[in-house]
Amino acid sequence: MQFLFAGFRALPLDAASWAGGFMARAIGPLLPAHRTAEKNLAMVFPELTAKERQKILAGMWDNLGRSAAELPHLPQEELHRRVTIHGAENLPPPGKSVISFSGHFGNWELTYPIAHRRGIPITIIYRKANNPYVDAIVSKLRATQSAGMIAKGPSGVAGLMRAIKDGQSLAMLIDQKMNDGISVSFFGHDAMTAPAIAEFALRYDMPIIPVRVTRTQGCRFGATVFPPLAYEKTGDKAKDILTVMTNIHALLEGWIRERPEQWFWVHKRWPS
Image (cartoon, rainbow, N blue to C red; front, side):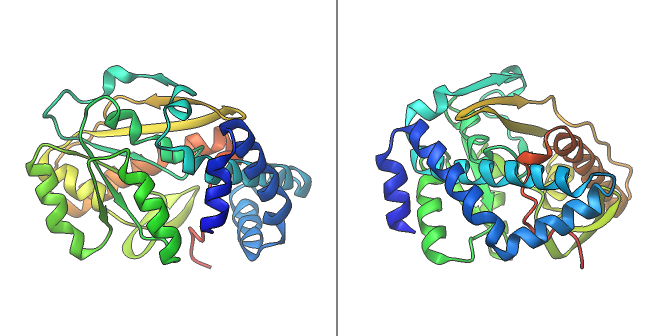
């Protein structure tokens, strides 16, 4: 893995992106994860033909391969010059803590640098990779584009509270399965979901800002910073958390329906 990352880093950005997409399109369909993606697509889009679903999956592998190959270039200015940003006015002013979220969509690693590179301290809440070597490499690269990183789980709660107290903003991906989370409707099916973003927003009155990075062509991107998501406190904590998480997933679902080939279909998001 280190050899592969070093190879992508040594290549010019466009060449690395192309090579990553080519390799993933060739290898991805041979992996067990491809079967998971096929099942997910068939469940979510039963109206599509098998040929249409395979076209989406080919695009997904291309996007995933390109994103992986672009990751070693994350500290380099050239990659960030490829991102056209819309809605920058929705970024928080200095000293204002917000929670931004995205999903495994487009090249999601380019979401949090949008704030960091504008002097807004942002802490990434992340799930550790299963492979410790991959986790170490990715964490080191992410650290160059953030104020800090906190792994998901009970041990990270104290760090999150300190970050909020210090005026930092938080960034997280919200579309991964969490078995001990809450059930939220996603594409009309129950999906176990981590409720942390809603819990922290409601507890600390923090704005929730959606951020999406879409691959437009090759190694070029369009990023959108959306206005804060509206929510209210009714006094019923469980109900308020579910409402926030349902609205967040409805927004993410809209993004995916618009560009299904740019989402991470290989994840076991729904129960069997």
